[in-house]
Length: 284
Image 1: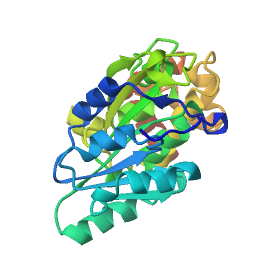
Image 2: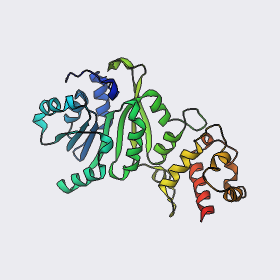
Image 3: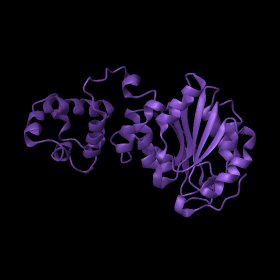
Image 4: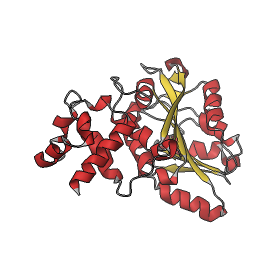
């Protein structure tokens, strides 16, 4: 194991339990057609287990400069299928990585993501993955337990919110298992959980619903954020910052009228899509 003193500024809590690493890799099940991107390899323990699988290629993004030379030396025997990039994963061009993998091998390779994600960058990483989902098949992420439970929350619960709706609309989220705080060094104050987001199984694919011709992803995301902007307000009140008074009055005579006196947390994914389509129809 590579020995590093955890940096608080990077939110580092290294997973040191080998059984947890084994469970994570079994959940990912990398195959010979997989290009894996590991976020923050740190001490290299998960890296080691990933490289023990038949994956095609592993790209590790590491922000901590101290770890770079040791990671390269530790896995020099895998140099033909392992590379370390010193930099922030949030700056990674996932489209270019996917295109490069296909151009190099001429095969239908899957680009997949894995990593132990610090709390402070969970949301930016999640939204980056959603933005780039056409280039990646899935992401297996070790998150704080509270965050994982938000991603898998049900409507009409306190945990249900923007990340829940967007992650499950543009993908399919599963909470696989919990990891206790004692499995990390330094020991965090909270437990963690492993989640897997399958971007090939979005709402339209999963439900067999026809994607509206004029569906605008950016506007849908903006609507979801607006509706959860003030959780205690009704959809009617939150929409006032998004659409005109005239448009809101038109909605009161449409099929979407039934949503207006509810709060956003009461809507399921189908409701959000119906509401979005109603707003789009009025805006034409």
